[in-house]
Length: 289
Image (cartoon, rainbow, N blue to C red; front, side):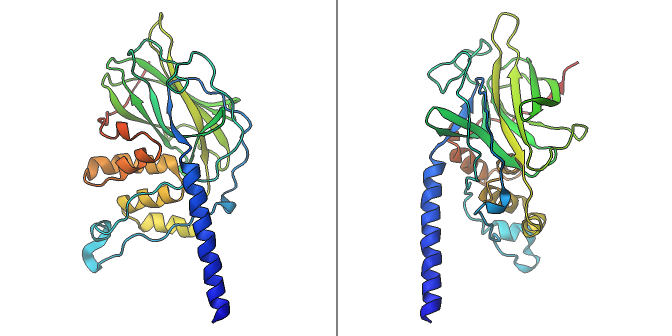
């Protein structure tokens, strides 16, 4: 009995220490606003050492199915994964608003990428995980004109992987831009840098945001949990495991199908963007010629 009690005590002490450490780290998340952020020196992410585990959410009440489980869902919690170290400083035109390059599209309105930004001293890391071969990216676009935008993806910020131009919808709000099935699949454990740029015209600076995305492999157990989960459960499981891009995509879909679910609001609050939670979601986008 003494041995069992000692084991439980040690586990409890470890969990308390880990949660305390993680809560401090989460406070360093800041939103990414328009600017040019050259990030360098990414370290390889090793999912085998990630301490985050997922517990099954809710219960199935016989024929109640997913709806019965969703009634018992816990609040969404985004757990910070192991974040690669080594970043560069913001460059280009900057303002007091987080190093933002404003351009002249819409005065005093920033283009914002819905991605965690981890800051340490004068450096910052704009980065998130995905498990999708063709993930989606979320942005707040303030422009109310059908301007041209470009999404570019590069392997290790060196080799061009994909680039496409699109016509923005001409409405301010949240848009989601997905890599099409015709684009190259993201390789496992490979860091990719993405850029999203809005052309503000020949006499204006473009608005640009950039960051990193990395596809990670998950365990067979977690895959099974995601397969059996409802959409609401799936979003929470992804967030608990620190898989940002897919959690955001699922939360956006959940916002459309079940506005009463607060996953969208909770997820944006986790990266200090709760002020955008009520912005409309706008269909995007028409490909440019």
